[in-house]
Image 1 (cartoon, rainbow, N blue to C red):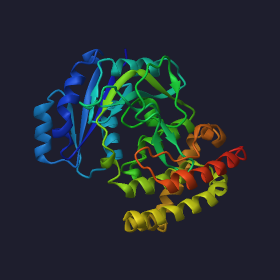
Image 2 (image 1 turned 90 degrees about the vertical axis):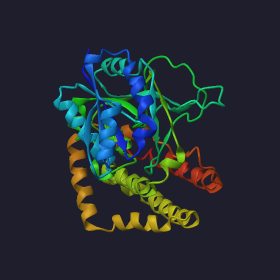
Image 3 (image 1 turned 90 degrees about the horizontal axis):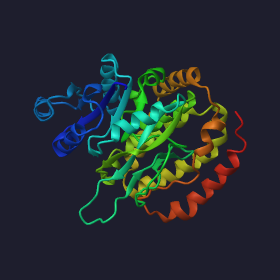
Image 4 (image 1 turned 30 degrees about the vertical axis):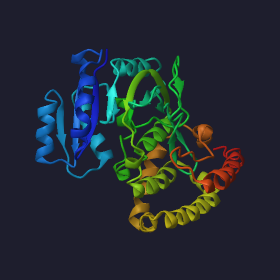
Amino acid sequence: MAKVGIILINYKNYAKRFLTEARDSLRLLDYPKELFSVYIVDNASSPETRQYLKQVYPEAQILPRDDGNYSAANNAGAKRAIADGCQYLAIANLDTKFEKNWLAELVIAIESDSTIGIAQSKILLYPQVEEKKIKINSLGNIIHFLGFGYTSDYKEPDREINGLIEIPGYASGCSFIIKSEIFEKINGYDEEYYMYHDDMEMGWKTKLAGWKIVLAPKSIIYHKYEFARSILMVYYMERNRYLVMFHNYRLATIILLLPAIILMEGGMIFYSIISGWFKVKMKVDYYFLKLSSWQKIIAKRKKIKILRKKKDREIIKGFSGRVLFQEINNPLLKYLANPFFNIYWQLIKKIIIW
């Protein structure tokens, strides 16, 4: 069996809120204890958090960082795990509870086919006391052609799934496994993303490099998902959806999508005004007005070109023309934007042959 590095990221007080249950469930894994190591990257570290982590989870390796960059933190954990001889990297959120078969099933999935680069767990919502049925958080995430990402089957009742299912979008960063050699070949996480859409970027370039992403439905994890916590960093969510497009689409594809990009930009500016984050939106736009930003984008595109084994037309087959933010019931999005952009996408993707 393979050696696995499990990478968890603590941010400020997350460990005090979530670590105990995550630790207890990791200790019960049915994977051989000598074949996995836990690496906790203490992001935005302080002497107090380091001491707490060492006290609460003494068998884990604690890696302190001070800047809060989630992507860089994952890279730090991966670097240490690979140096320790780990053949696979299991990336997981700290606000989770692991079923005992979580890791073993991920390893079985990724070892089942040499063309698989990433396998995602079945991610279930952590059960609330008042709920009678377990609900789904993600069976794989979906990419909208304009760079938005969202979970599939969100809040649907849990159901039995047999066999590995190829994910048309990307694996949720909440819980997935990747081969160490692939992680290195694709240059790990892009630290420019900082946080949000980092998992989309990881999945997109993994596919461009020729590997598949699958759902391992027998690998179960429960996620203490809080939507309000996810929308606090709207700057990175909006900026990074542009980055993932500008990094990964061929130039011809970007030109074809320009009318939709411009129209969506106008819609997002309007939405930011009525929603109270117009200044944040202007900060995003300013990022793309800087020469240094485009120098970084061009450098990244060169790296992607070296990796690329798949054409855009192969990658976009599973992309969506609708934005389905399940927690936001916006009539303009539902009845105006989604129908228009979906029709646009259905027409445009037939033209993309490169």
